[in-house]
Amino acid sequence: MWTSSFDLHCHTTHSDGSLSVDELADEMAKQQVKVWSLTDHDTIAGWDEAKRAASERGIKFIPGVELTCDVELPWNREILEANSRNRPPSSWHLLAYFPHEPLEDGLKQFEAWLSPLHEDRVPRMLEMIDKVNAFGMKIDPVDVLSRAKGSVGRPHLAMAMVDAGHVESMNEAFEQWLGDGRPCNVERPKPSLAEATALVHAAGGITSLAHPRYYGVDYETLIQHLKASNVDAIEAFHRSHSDDDRHRLWKLAEAYGLGVTVGSDFHSFNGGHRPGHMPVVINALPELISSA
Ligand SMILES: [Zn+2]
Ligand SMILES: [Zn+2]
Image (cartoon, rainbow, N blue to C red; front, side, top):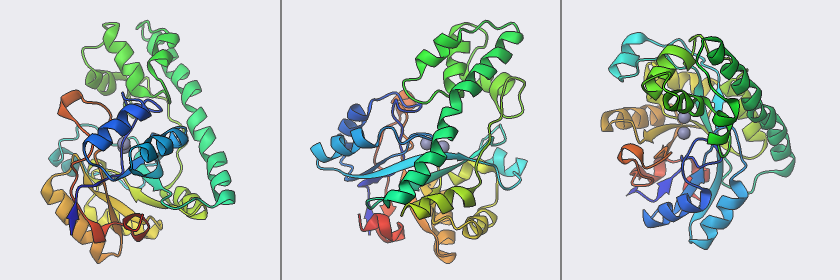
């Protein structure tokens, strides 16, 4: 049975989204989303707000987070290009979900593990701004940090560079300066899928690899790697994935005994994006989620 009532991937001002939790909850309600997960980057700061906002609107809320993990398999340029990605991936994104009340000790451990990954974002950003300045592009750290209502990230710096006239576009900022391997990027330690998944499992949650199309890896190889890392699911039904991608990923996941998840990856209304409206087959979802 197909349904469009799940949206398990979206961002708010707690990371790089443009809506507050309340504004996003309104949109989810308007789009008739019935099961909603908030998955801000490397932070769970929005959970309490979102839980309240969801219950006020009669929506089931699943606490979630999008974890920035290491690149674990080599990318293939042809696959990247076929998917119109012109940059190799700098990280893989792992969605973590806690559909049922997380286990207290496990959650404490998970939070303790997560907080340096999150806190690391400011020192890293300051280092990147230093590098940008060293190339003669004047950027005020206060300007960059004030653009982030939650976690600061490279998009905030890219926006500041565009506004200051140092580059023409966000894309140029990444291509020339901020992307992986570019001169102003500062690498930060990233966990492996297996490490992150073990911590999430210990807190009673499950994981799903976000937007599998972005990594330039053959889908079957990727799914075998997920199995080996104990990842529970794959986000076959991501907004940017074609029907053909969704179908292939879904069937492969089924063959390997992985669940699939669904998400709009909504950040803002730019470019006609909107939350919800993501059809998925209910019984392909991980049991913990479909039973939510
Ligand atoms: Zn992502
Ligand atoms: Zn995302």
